[in-house]
Image: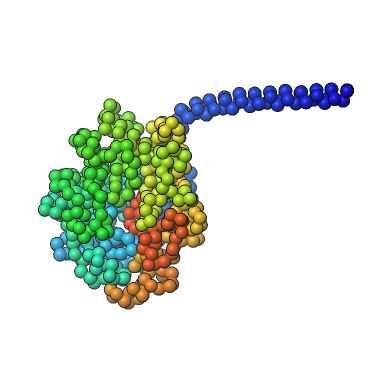
Length: 526
């Protein structure tokens, strides 16, 4: 009996202690939840000047920036790519214009004005937002030089108010040749839009490029900046007055860069012109009837060379984040910011409205052609929005009742960048020249042909079909990327996956610049 009683007593004490522990744990958990909830409403500290450098992203940025040099056309100045030389020196001569500058679109020798202008706009945006971070790793000057190489071309491509040359070269003829740009002898016909053959989308995108670039050069070269702004205003007026899709009016361009509409470019261009000029008429343009017609508020879209709505929404959200007077009570601007929030909520993996367009490895995946354009562009917008939140002391983003801190957006952006740089099931980098393992058979004419080879238009195809890796490295090129099942076929004939594009470089440079270090966002571009 004594032993049994003692055993029961011990059991009772054990139960009492266990119950007490549960009660204490519940109290602690409740207090912690309240504190966490309280912290959700507390803004994160505003970053100061550029801080510690993240070597991984700094190294990747220095590599990515070089692809602009790989793609340059014209008489090269201070050429940094050993296997490149002068090319296309007579481009534009049939119209008595100098269109020798600019950049080739991808692995071919075409100059497509629509994606090239987008390249300039995004590169300008990256410089305006993250120029201090670029400068911290000595990449600001290369970025500005590459931008000017494009805008010099765009200025010359706009010889009068209502004429814009939007293409150099014949893509059908160009794609029948496989040769180095330095030796090409084929005719390089010009394509233009004008009042009889309007191209609102390409003219407005070029206006956006000129307006954003005018801000980049405003302090360093005010005369050049004013020239860019003059062209931007003229091109916007032309685009708006003579409305029509360039790919509908010039059907042959639709095979390569078909525009699905021009309303987004009009809003994008007007938004940049407002930032460049402060002219209220441009703000009224985007928030008034044109906004209602074209903005598609509340329907998240993918940011790309074809669709600028998400970019416009994030760009205009600056005005409400940073407390400008024009934002107060402006329902149109609120619609843009709310739409930008919808885009952000679709990107965050744990959001109730998260997109299902992802691979198992976590990369956003929308299209099998040039698959990496969308995740990298999305990540660039996400980190911009995160930095706006931090600098404006906005503590959280609400997605369907769930709250997310700015750090969640930055974490998403890093996940996309890391995937590109090698944190993926293939353990390979899709940025050519970065890491130990990257594509060796890049679909790129200049990179695939030895510099001492003598080739004409067609006999160079033996280099396309060669089983040897490229003799020249298309350094910094961001290739198309993986299929949905996360496979990649490293073959020169696989242009769907293995071809880098110049506009890919703009978005990856923007993303990497944002991740090199942290600093507070620029509250005004002027």
